[in-house]
Length: 84
Image (cartoon, rainbow, N blue to C red; front, side, top):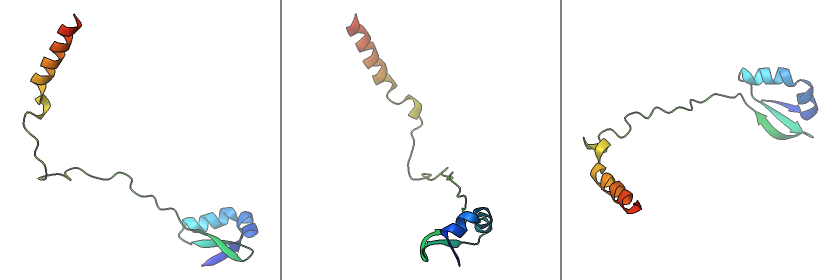
């Protein structure tokens, strides 16, 4: 792996970035001591496909959208009556 001092890296930054983008990693050194490793950036898929990850692990009732509806109406009506 190639090693460049900071001055050389600054002077040839564009060319070095192109090399890294093509897969050639390199090291930048200060006073001959390695301080950073430059590697190509690989875009990772940030969207994870999770559809169906709980399939057959949980059960959703058929009346899920209406669960607790009667209790909610009773509470709402009680609060409305108390306000008057």
